[in-house]
Amino acid sequence: MRNTTLLIVVVEITLFPARFRHSHRTPPVGSYKINTDGYVKDGVASGGGIIRDSSGQCIRAFFSFYGDCTILEAELRAILDGIILAQRLGLSVLWVESDSTLAIHCITKGGGPWHIQATLRHIRHLLALDRDTITHIFQEGNQVADLLASEGWDRRYYYEYSSQDLPRRHRSLVQIDRFGLPTIRGL
Image (tube, rainbow, N blue to C red; front, side):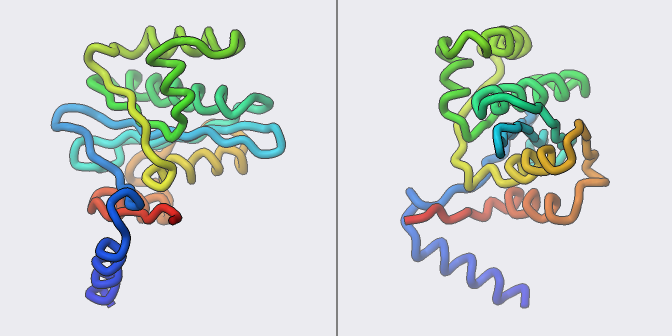
């Protein structure tokens, strides 16, 4: 069965051009990667994220419930929660990755509506943009954070997972990312 599964992955990689394949990239040795995502359903928001080391291993994952807010606010609050968690764990040299190009633009270039400015200032204060990195990832490569964000909406509270108590589905997605297996984006 294992060989059959591997063969299917190889066939998918061959059939789809590179522009349709997206996979998680691990951070350089000595740094940590935070993948985050925001989620809004019926006007109610949540967020989640995962912190990984340079081998792709989960250090910690989280989800949080934010209540009434926009998707941009949820994306930024998830980024902020991830940075605060990393700093609480004593981690530095961070690579923050989000599937929200607007959130990344607001953090790196400035701007955005007035109601997000305090969150933006807090993020910029905690990140050292000369040392830390913030980049975009396609949604297909951000599946663990997406799953955590929707879990925050379902559970409606803040929670952290250690690497040992990460649920099976989450662990499976982390392993797929660690092996660098791509996710195929729709044609």
